[in-house]
Structures are given as C-alpha cells and as structure tokens.
Amino acid sequence: MKLWLLALIVSLLTLAITGCSSPRESTSGLPTVDIDSADRRAEDWPAPVADTQLAVLPEPVALEIGVVVFDDGIRNPDAQDARDKLRSVEARLAATSLRDILTESGQWGAVRVLPATSQFAALTVSGKIVHSDGRDFVLDIRAQDATNRVWLQQRFHGVASSADYTDAASEPFRSLFVAIANRLAAAADGLSETDIRRLVQVADLRYAGELAPASFSPYLVEQGGYIQIQRLPADSDPMLARIDRIRNQEALFIDTVDEQYVDLGNEVGPTYKLWRRSSLEQAEYLEAYTARAASRELKADQGSFAAMQQVYSAYRSVRIQEQDLFELATGFDNETAPTVLGTGENVVRLAGTLEEQYAQWRGILARIISLEQDGL
Image 1 (cartoon, helix red, strand yellow):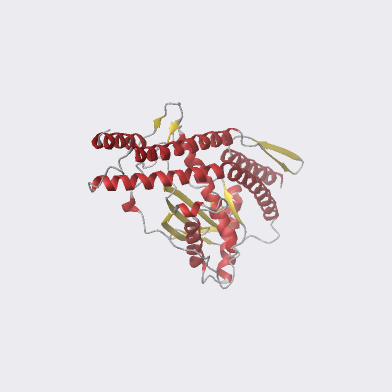
Image 2 (tube, rainbow, N blue to C red):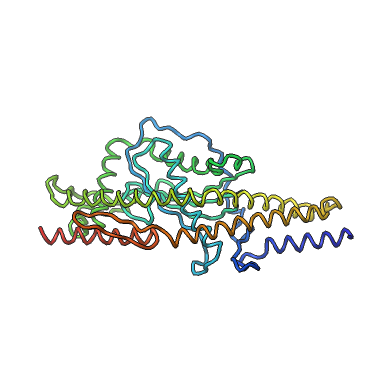
C-alpha cells in the first residue's frame, strides 16, 4: 500500500478517535467520551504541582473539615451519556481522595465528605473538575470557613505518567491533593487558640441557625461580608443540648454515607484507574503522531500498518474501560443502598441518591428541632 494512502487511513482513524467536542454515540449504542474534549484549554492551566511531602504545622489545628463532593464540570447537565456518568464518579472519588490526604496529614480534626454544602464543619472545601484525561487533572479549589473567610481559591494542575499507574493501590495524582493539603496548612499557620475557638463557636451557631433560625440567628451578625458573634447563648440553654444531639445524628448519617463512597471506590476504582491509564496512553500517542505530521516527518515506519494498529489498540482499550465504567457507575447510582437511621424512638428510611438522602435527612432534623421548640 502506498505511503500517502496509509497516512490518510491513520489520519482518518485519528479523527474518528478524537472527533469533535460534543458527545457521540458508539456503534454499540453506548455513549462515548472524547479524550481531547473542549474543556482542554491548557493555556488556562497553571504549572503542574510537584508537592511530594505533606506539610506539618507546629501544632495540629483542631478544626473539622467538610469536603463537599466536587462539581463535575459538565456543561450540559441534562445530557445523559458516558461523559456525564464518568465525571460524576470522578467528582466523588476526587473528593474522597482529598479527604484521605487531609486525614493522612494529621493536621486537622475530623475530615468528612459531605454530599452537599452545609454549615456542618468549621471549614468547607469545595471543588470543580476543569479537565481530566488520565494525564492532566485540573481542579478549581475553594476553601471557606464559617466566618466567610476564604482560605484558598486556586486552580491546581496535576500531571501523571505511565509510571504513576504501576501501583494499583496508589493515587496517580497524589501530588495534586498533597499540594491542596499543604496550601490549607499554610493558610492555617499562625491561627491562635482564640482564633480557632471563636471559629468553632461561629460554626456551631451557624449550624444551629440552619436548623432553628428563629432561635439562633440573632447571635450572629454580618459585618463587611464576614460573620461575627454578637453574643453567645447561655450554657444552660436547652436548645443547645438539642442542637448538639442533632449534630451527632447528622455525623452518624455522614459517616454512613461515607461507607458508601468507600464502596464506590472499591467497586469502580480499579476499572477507573485502567480507563485513566488507557486515556493517558492514547493522548500521548495521538500528540506524538500530530507532532510528526505537523513537522512533515511522517515516515514509512511511522505511517505503517503497525502504527495504525497502535492507534486503534489505544482507542479500543479506552472504549472497553469506558464501557465497564459506564455500567459500574450506572449500577452504583441505581442501586445506592437505602440508609436506615434511628432518631430517638423512631426509625427513618432514606432512599434515592446519596445527595437526595442527605437533603431528606436534613429536612427531618429541622422538623425535629421545630417540634421540640413547640414543646418547650
């Protein structure tokens, strides 16, 4: 076969793999993901992080942290395809990875993954996936405490190589999560015991105000965009004891949900890692091919049938892992275990996605507080 014809075939196959930025349907009926998608705008990315060691503060900060499940960054939330489903999985797994690193650092109080934003923790970390293809992982991270002080608002860029995927138990983008943890530690450095105690008080009052606004909102005031304590409730206030009991109930729910996030990681994690590695290999090969073509260095051995097979092999590997992930992720959403919890003499059964269950549970807690207030 002539060289120009081989080059044309490889080019057409490359176009079939990369395609355009919008989702497509595969011939098997399964939606597919474009590896080099429209969210890949490298000029907007910072330099890759290179943090390897977790920072250590002179004294650990006794603050609870809530890591909210990340925004998946999907531009068309109404579309139901593999791209949306995989990004949904990534958003949950990335949040749990950050939780694990923060816990490993030993610099904080309890660190929990929250299904949705709430005032449960003194410091809340949220994030959004900007790009993910197995080689480049870009996150927008924001950390804000209960007083509305922003500790961190930064875009992080992590890069993984094939070597980072050799250990099945390791996180290929560990340096990215270590960098986030270190920036949070730097923001906490210098806080006094008084600062921490006051921040915890504000967090407790804001949480109480979410459940019983009429009783607890007057204790706080906003000045210049920041929340400050106007006065403190009496230690003997019976509502404080009720709020504390309710908060323990919510912690129980969050810990129960966390077990399901762990199950998600155990079930989907291995296939997800294979998919990311296959995506990395495909992206690297296609970049090298494009560079050769652009510099007019495409030679017979590079445009041979073997090279064409290599492109197709990378494509096929990505699609196989993608299909497995799509099925696993769909199954997880459809089969999320109902959560059964006790509140006093009552047993509550929650159903739906974990995010829906969390909303149901918070509504129940608010109703409990309201009924108890009426009974005072």
